[in-house]
Image 1 (tube, rainbow, N blue to C red):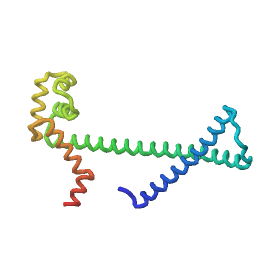
Image 2 (cartoon, helix red, strand yellow; image 1 turned 120 degrees about the horizontal axis):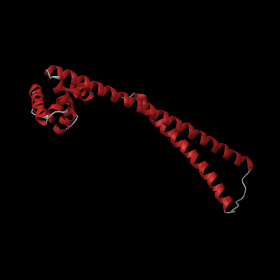
Image 3 (tube, rainbow, N blue to C red; image 1 turned 30 degrees about the horizontal axis):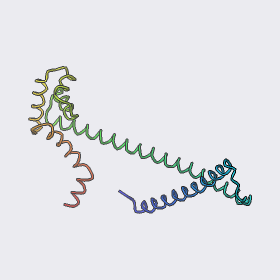
Amino acid sequence: MRVPGERVSRVTGKIVVAAILLVQSVCAIFFVSDIVLSVFNVYVSPIPWQTREYLEIGAAVGLIMGVVLGAMVIHRSHRERRRAEEKLRRASGAFMQLLVERFGEWGLTPAEEDVALFAIKGMSTSEIAQLRNTSEGTVKAQTNAIYRKAGVAGRPQLLSLFIEDLMEEGPLSRARAKAG
C-alpha cells in the first residue's frame, strides 16, 4: 500500500538525482577537457583563477554528492533485499504450516507425508523412490493413497489445493472479498 506523500517523495528524489547527475556531468566535462587539452598542447584563453576555483569546488561537491547518493542507493537496496528475504521467509513458513495442517487433516502417514512433499516439489516417481530407498510401485501406491485422501485426481490438483489456500490469505482474495 502506498502512502499519499510517497509519490511526491519519489518525484523529489528523481529531481535530486537528476541535479546531482547534471553537476557531475559538468564537472566531468571540465576535468576531462582540461586533461585532454593539456595532453594535446592545446591552449585556450585562460579563465580567471576565481572561476577556475569555483569550477573545482563545484566538481568536488559533485563528486561528494555522487558518493553520498551511491551510499544511499546501496543502503536502500540492502534494506529492500532484507524485506524481500523476510517476505520469502514468511511465505515459506506459511506454506510449510499449510502443508502440515492439510497432511494432518487428510490423515497421511509419515511416509505419505514425505512422498506428498516430494511430489509437490515436482520430483518424479523414480526420484522419490530413489530418495526414499524404495520401489517405484510403493511410491505409486502411496501417491494414489495421498490423492484419494486429499480428494484429487493427481499432482496438478494436489498442488492447486495449496495454491488456492495461499491465495485465500493473500491480497488478491481480500480484494475479491471487498469487491463482492
